[in-house]
Length: 216
Image (tube, rainbow, N blue to C red; front, side, top):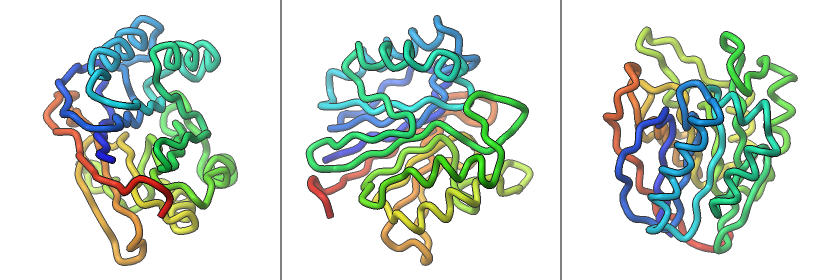
């Protein structure tokens, strides 16, 4: 199964490469209005002909998704996509789990306080998850701002160690774009899939990742 990983498109509409499953890790829009959400989903629908499945989560810019969760789910699923909101889906034996939350920052959508408030979301991630999709990164993993500050989530870090997914894809910190593996989590490949840079210019390519179908 070839995964095409993107995040933080913020209304940009780049052409995407072929693959089996397209995964969008949130921030479809700039300000999360109904119109912007609809336009972003229509762009994904236009791309979707080359994929067997599309997996979508929301991000901190996607305000409509948090304010109107039922309508958001209907909008996504009416286009034939899988919408993950602290929930999962199995595709050809590969188990995906997604969550839109990220640590509190200036009262954006899906913000949660660090500690117990955000930990309850991570505690729901099943231990048999193959592909973990979160909007924000774990602490110390492709999470440094241009100022050099690591701003990822420490509690998500602990969840990754518990779950040991094969792939963890996220975005949120645009300048953290890239791929990483680390000795403390040898089973997991980490991907910051932010398409735009800090200036919201769509300069980064999607990540292409192959995973074996069926549970490991």
